Length: 140
Image (cartoon, rainbow, N blue to C red; front, side, top):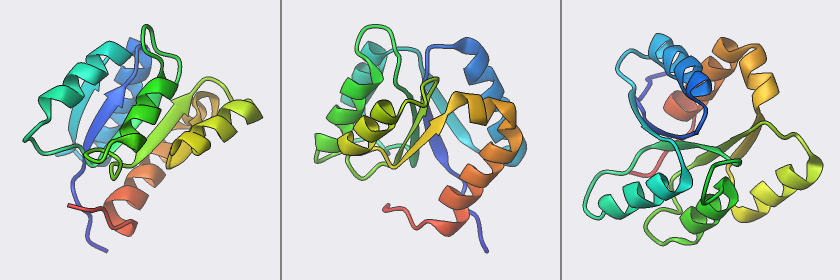
């Protein structure tokens, strides 16, 4: 199975989580293109700058962001004609049923608890990357 090198946007305010995920993705594919924004307002500014740019293949979104929270960002992305096709993986410290349900109602493609991801982060990142780069067909 041929893999596509992915471009990934992390919307995450915790530098330790960014560092762990970045290292794991770089081990899985050294050519992966990672972009990072640290809060909801920066994410919205990034979306505005994408007017004629190539969008990321995948977005990892923390729900608990300073300023505009992840739920607001997710709702914006999935209601936008321009961005709704981008798969969004919600990465949250919460595993509450209501949070999971709400994220899926807003259009999340996947919801993952940080406690699971960071418990065995390399295996999880490998599985996520394998799925989105080699199994799933993404729109261009």
